[in-house]
Length: 95
Image (cartoon, rainbow, N blue to C red; front, side, top):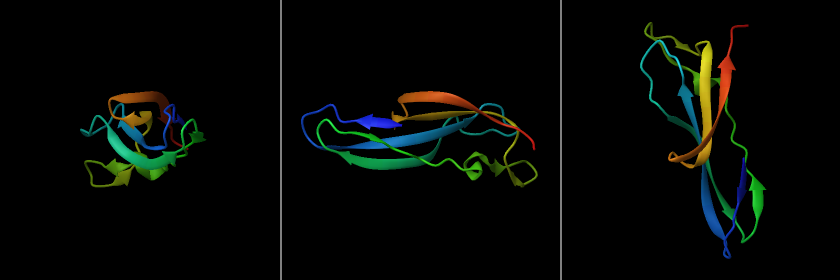
């Protein structure tokens, strides 16, 4: 995601990536923080911040105590806080 310092001084910003399993066979948190990065930007600087999302970030222990990624949709959200997020949908499908 792109981060811009619109201020007149250098500053830090935290970029957060959350995952929500839209339909799960077991109860899961509404939002799970899966990645974050703090960046320092000079006044007026714009930078693209990359956060990697691996299949393991979508996995969980199911009712049979197996670590897996279930098929279905996930909402991937990024922002500087959990209250200010932009989201996209991701589908996990069987091979």
